[in-house]
Image (cartoon, rainbow, N blue to C red):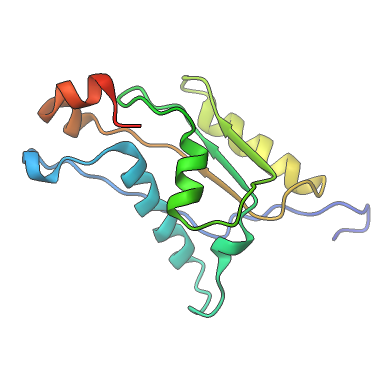
Length: 142
């Protein structure tokens, strides 16, 4: 904690997954790509395998996808990551090019105020998969 009684948010891991395959069997939905990116970010922290950061995640913010219909994508990600529930905060944002920066800023502000300790900010699209499986993507899976 800082002298002013506020916490300093620090980005501890970043993940970036790209699936540009044009094969139907490689088609993946956005949630799966996000899960891979989150796992990659957790590994990037450099902490040993005994440190389970997933159990400390108390916030998930997700940029709304254009290519897949989800109801509660932050809740779905938390469930697939085996994060203890309930989350203190979750958000499935509106669409928009400013949303990644906006929700990252909001997560940092919550950490600064002590409302959250470990926040995940994620987003993803499956444009290549959408071209391969348009009927599935049109109606969504969740």
